[in-house]
Each structure stands twice: as structure tokens, then as C-alpha cells.
Length: 370
Image (cartoon, rainbow, N blue to C red):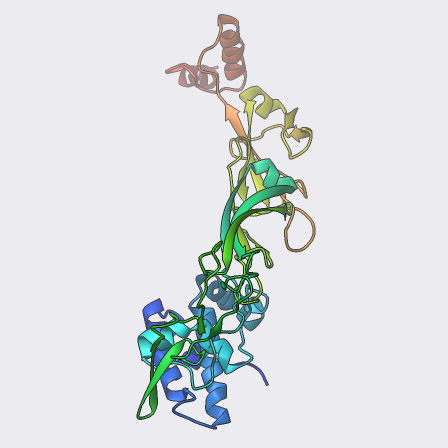
């Protein structure tokens, strides 16, 4: 069965603002919340569907991909849409359920289990050449990992955490009012679901320690500013045995002193004299490798261009390269020697080009009277 359009699922237009998306998701989640529809499989499916739609449309990058390519565009973007269980939904949008709706997950959702670590972001500066040809960089990433002393438990060696007696390990305390379950963070364990009587001295009971890790990231040829690379499980360490988050490397590429980049195409301006433009010539133009010789046709005008196929930037997705477009700038001299002026005046006279006031009309009058 094909997926429904995400905008249709939330009942909003394609130009909906973030505020409108959140408001629409609130309403859908309230209508189909499992506490309001116990045992209703169809309501649960719609609850997950609304969460999936909001998860994509509330993320600017995923929304852009979805608007351009539909469901296929977000299939491999980041986490990827779709929720396998209700716990996934509550884990992803727990802040909305707790702070906006005023109700949390249904009974039995325990918060004391393994938790995936947060993602990290690293902004990496590249030269134009590094982006064009590709490179590898070693990054030093400060992050938190499970404490080596207590192995992430947060408890002193020889002891272990116990289930919080106040929330029974859920991390939240619940109070039912009619259809809804009002939830708040457990005041005793502060949401961890665990009670640590004797905390680890090395990590103060946090279960984590800060380290610096060197990570190699391989930059493919053809990247540009805005390209994002994902390194799985290189983010912050998880808690209570959970997996690490991911590391996202955002690239910023310096401009070239020679080329102007437009996607995979490169543009370069090549200056030629007006004599070269008129008579034609051969000139050397820069490329990403060695300079290459191109032929300038006789009669070339200012702004004329020549395309060097497959000499541009490599395509990150797909094969082949872009082009180099050479734009010819015809330079007019600002000063002439006496001999140069005489030669040009002789040419102007031969070609009957008026360069002096009255000269052309005087010559025409003489021709007509003869």
C-alpha cells in the first residue's frame, strides 16, 4: 500500500509554516492518541502516520528533499521516516507530548533502558581544490562516552543502580484525568528511571566521561558548501548501554581565485586583445589540471564563449564531470604609440571607418563628384 502525502496526513497546505505544522500535528496526535483509543489498531496506525509526517516536515532538510522527490527523497535521509513502535514515537517527540499536550506515553513505557547518544555537528572548512579533487581529513572530536570506571552505570564500583521507587523506572509520574494522562518528570530520579545510592566518584554519577577522539572523514570529489556527511556512531556515547549517536560533518568550501562555480560547471574569464579577437589566435586557459590551448576564432566578440566539455567538477552523485566555460574579454588599449595610431588610421581609412569628424563624409563627397 502506497504512503499518503505527508501534507494530506496533517491536513495542511504545502506552504504551511513550522507553527502551522506543529499545531496540525498536535490535533492529529490528540485525536489518535492510544490513551484515548485503547486497543484501536487503526487509531494507532494513524498516530504513527501523523508522527512520521511531522518528523519529515518539521525538519527543513528532509522537507526540502520530500518537496522535490517525494517519499523516495527522504528514504535514506538521516534517520529515515517511519516508526516501528509506539515507544519510537514517544522517544522522538516526548517533549511535545509532555510540554504541549500535557500527556505522556501510556503505562509501562520505561525510560530507564538503553538510550541512544545525541548526534554531533562539526563544521569543516575546505579549500576549493580539496573540494574539487576530494581529500581525507583527520578530525579531533570531543565527546562523551560511557565512564570507564563504572561502565556507564553511574554507580560506585561493586554497586548498581536500582529502580526509582517513585516512578517505578518510567522516569515520569502520571495522573489520569478523563481520557488523558497528565505526565511530569519524576522529581526523584529526574527522568532517568533509576536511583543511584552510591554514585561513581570519577563521573559524579553521570555515567559518562569526556574524551577526544580522532576520526578520519573521507571527502568525495565534487562536494560544495552545504554538503553534509554522516559518520554513523561517531557522536556522543549512549547511556545505559545504548548506541552512540552520529556525527554530521557540514562542509564549507572557499571560493576559487580563478573559477566561478555553478554546480558542476566552472566559468573563467580569458582576456584577449582586440587584434587577437579580430584575426583569431590560440591562447592558454586554466583548467583543474594543466592549462590547455584553445582556438579563438577570427571575429570573436566581447562575451563570446567556448565550452570545454567534461573539464569541470566531478558529480558527487552519478558519473562524469561538468564543463569549463571560457568567456572572452576583448581588451581595448587605452594608449597607443605614434606608429600604432598610424597603422590603425590607415586600416580605418582602408575599411572606410569614420574616426575623424567629417573625414568619412568628405571622402564620400569626393567619390560622388568624380
